[in-house]
Structures are given as C-alpha cells and as structure tokens.
Image (tube, rainbow, N blue to C red; front, side, top):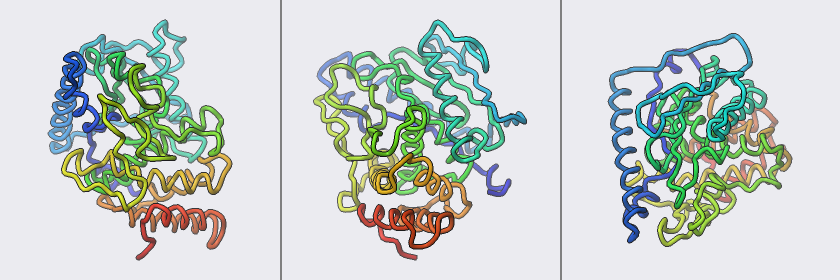
Length: 358
C-alpha cells in the first residue's frame, strides 16, 4: 500500500450494535428499555454526524510510530460522561486496575495487536505502531461500543438487554479492525462495500478471539458478541458466522435479519444500505473456507483475507464479487493454483452464491 493511499483514509463511525436492533428496542412497551435504546440511537447519530464533519474537513489523527513490536495502550475512564477520551486510568505496562472493565479493554487491545503482529506481521492498526487508545464507562447505560476513527469507546450496557461491552474480545477486535480497513482498502461504508467493511471486522474479530483462546476452526463458536446479550434476551450473540440469521430471536430485539447467501440478500435504505445485515454473506463465506481448511483459521484462511484486504487492489467501492475474485487470487498467489486453499475459496464463494467472474 503506497503512502499516498494510506493518508487518504476517510474515518467512519462504526458501532458494533447495528441501528436496526436498537430501533426495535426503542419501540419496546417497556418504557425504560425504549428510553435507553432511543438515547443510544440519538448519541450514535450525533457522533456519526460529527465524524462525517471531521472527515470532510480532512482532519486525521496524529500517528505515533514507536520502533518496537510492543503495543502502546492507554485506557481512559469517561466516568459516565461523553467527553473523550476521559481520565487516564491505565497505561502500557501498568499493573492491573481494580476495575475489571479497564483490564478487559487493555487485554483486548493487546490480543488484537498480537494477532495482527504475530499472524500477519502488521504493527498496530496503521502498520506504523499507532498507539491504541480506549475509553470505558462511556455515557450512562450506553448500549454500544464504537471506533470513531481514532480510538475505541465502550459503553457499560444497561445490564438488561446488553452487558458491559468489554466482555467480548471479538467485539474489541471487531472495532479495531475498522481501523485496519480505514488505513488499507478504506472500504466505503455503504451497500456491499460497507457490508464487506463490517465483515472484515467480524472475520478478524472472530480470529482474535480464536487466537487468544488457541482454538481451531472446528472448536470456535463463530459468534460475534457472545456473552454480550443480557439475561432476559433470547439469543446467544449479535451475529453468527456459522449460521447467519440465528444469533437471536427476541421479543424486544427482533429476529436476526442476516442472510447467509445471495438468495436472501436484503435491499434496504436503512443501516447504510444494510451493512450490518448483508455482511452475513461474506462472513459465511469465510466460515466455510476456514472450516474447509481446518486447523487454526488465522493461519491460512485469515492470511488470504488479510492479503486481499491489504494488497492494494481492493477498491473503496468494491462489491462482494470483487472481493471473491481478489481473495481467490490471493489464495492462488500465496498457496498455488488448484491447491486446498484455492479449492476452499471456490467452494466458499460458490456456496454463498457469489460468482467468481472477471
């Protein structure tokens, strides 16, 4: 990736809980649930607008470039306010905090840094040692976590529909991967390119969880946000890569709308053209490729996805077919034509109904 492209990134505001899910909760007959969901939606809308204005002005974060392979993490506490970053509570190398949320955020940033460095030779989000900052205890009962183009931010959840957003390491990895995409292919956050953007975050979020737990593709649960849903919610996670559309089916949150194949592709104007919905299709393709290859999913399937994301040929407005073609080409380039990896990619994209043409 040439330097000129790396500095043309347009940061977008990316939340882990999609707006369609909060929209449903905001219509709850339970006044408290509806109010908290509405407050989260309003806060997200404000932040999204602010992010867009900042991007238009061309403001980019200052890059730090330490000459080591060690992460540079700082955790801040917003103390239930919304001013960022908040009060510094733990820096790189500092001892454990008495606050478990602080420690989970610190560990999650470290797990993400570790996979990208040891798995793919990438030094932090920007490949130049960018400092990793995160703020916890954002707002009051804020039901989301997000990457704002510069740092991670975690709400505490309401303890009812959602729990503390640091509980799932894959959620931390998901949001930080939006930063990796921002600094590489810079996929436009709308329609199929936006769904690819979301899918990249789910893929690498899941790999970070598998890497930290030393799981094989067969052992992994392939869920995004397992442990995040509250005790009263009928569901297991925000999304399932193994079986898109099955993560939850709840009176308050609705039914998981993700399709697994192009036959069920959802055309919608909401959620930036369904970026959190149709991401189920490339997510499922990755799951099929990874389980077909077996073993540790970050070693071959993950490497192929990383090569396709960072190789410089993935256009900002790429669609699913573009990524299918480039990822298959990446498998051939790294592992050879006609091998297990090439065949796994062909099988995966065929299974989800994305043609390998062009």
